Every structure is written in structure tokens, then in C-alpha cells.
Length: 362
Image: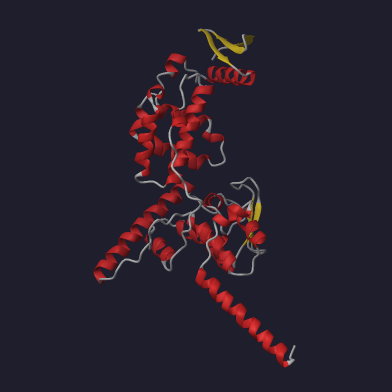
């Protein structure tokens, strides 16, 4: 697309960049030399690849155009690229995406935030706002758009320390019974049996699975640290039903597809349950099939590992991949009834031992 030459000069405490091209020079000033170098390289790269837009064209860029470029330039290099791309497309569906970046004010973002909060969880809204904020920052620093990030001036939704949602009896079966996805059931049951994240399950390759030794070796995890996940007899049975092969992926679906299948199945299960209650004259059970996220299955699995009473805290952390005990505690909500039963069992054992000592049998 033609040669370019970048020239950086320091004058009056600022670094002035001038990128020369056939049609003329592109100029910008920076406080830091590293920012000047980064901008010059980005402009040169854009010109060489044919994606360069003169400042006048950039200033007319809409939010939709910016998000699509952000997805192609920035998101694609992230570990969770598939999921973030799905989120970006959801953001683009809002009417604000048709507005030019330069016209978007904090009040517009605040209104968008409130529209989302009417139907989405605070944590979901915060993640969307974070993507938007970074998009504005990239537009300003790397795309030569003189825009101020409007998200710096608005309040972000408050998120609680963690969810405490556990599966109620029959909930998982009810959800999966209404699903039309052939892969949702084995994926969901694996999540409950292994405490693996959805992103980890859908990326599994058969070369990562050892049914003979009953473990899965995870190399690409959210926190960047690999781990070995032991397999329960139930997990082994699930994998065997998938007809193991020597290589290839276990599942064809991506995270977005499974998440959507879960939400649809949950909605269908609740509608069926509500209809059955009306027909039988029964009262709806509070919380049943309500506000149940796929990620709650990881909470469920983690709590069950503790409730078994055979694993220590560090053993559970090594299975789940939590790096700190604080993070692990957010995923652990134990069943008080089960704990009471274990206390009672422990007390009974102590009483038996004490009686044996008193009788001289020990």
C-alpha cells in the first residue's frame, strides 16, 4: 500500500510524531516517548495493511464500527476471544452503536447501563462496560481519534462478593430434559463432576483425557496455570459414553452456543414446571429453576468436593484451579444439613471410642 516513514522529534517537553505517506503527513503529539513510538508503529501498520483511515474519517467512526475494529484488532489476541466476541455483538445490538464515537457522552453511557441493568446481572453489565471503556481508550491512543472516554465519569454497578446458588433437587435434570442440544447434558454433568469451567470443557481434546488413569490434563486455563483434574466414576462413565478416540475435540459446540442452549433449556424447564404446578394446584417452590447460571455448576461441584469430607482445602484448590483461598471461598457454599450429619456422625464415633476406653477395650 506504499512506503511510510515515521519521524519523532522532542520539542518543549513533548514528542511530536510525523508519519510521512504518499498523500501527505499524519501528525500527533505525546507526553511519553513510548506512546509516540506505539502510535507511529500502529499508523504505519494500518497504512501498510490498507486499513488506514485519515483522522477526518476516524472522527466519523460509529460505536459499531469501533467495536468491530476492536474485535478484529484486540479481542482476537485474548484467551477468551470467542466469548468476548459474543459479548461485543450483544453490545452492538443496542441503538447507541449507531452513534459516532465523538457524540457519545457520559449521560448516554449511563442510560445504556440502566437499560442493561433492567434485564442483566450487575456483573454482566460491568463486563460490558469494561469492554466499552477499553474500546474508547484504544480509539484514543492507537486510532488517532480525539475522543474522551465517557465511561470514566459514570458509576459502575455494584457486584456482591459472590453467588451462593446451589442446585435444588431435580433442577439439573429438569433443565437438561427440555434441552434440544445433544452436547449440553454431558457438558453440564462433567461440570458438576469435575468443577471445570465451561471454557475448559469445550476446549478438551481426547489427548488430554486418560480414562485408564482417570484424570484430565488441562493446559489452557483461565488463570494461565495448567492442572490435573481427577475423574470420579461418574465422570469416567460420561466420557465413555462419548465414544473416546485417540485424538480430536470432545465437543463441537463453543461456549456461546452452550450458554445459549442452557438459557433456553432453563426457560423451557421453568415454563413447563409452572404449567404443571397450575394444573395440579401446587404452589411454586421458591427459587426453583430461577436465576440458575451454567457457571453455578462449578460452585456446586466445588461445594460437593468439600462436603465429601475426604479432601483438604489445598487438595480442592488443586482440583478446581483456584489460586487463593479467598477465591476458593467464594465458590464454596456448604449444605448445613450435610455438615450437621457429619457432626453427628463424628460425635457418635467419639462416644463409641470414649465408651471403649472406659471399659478397657482400648
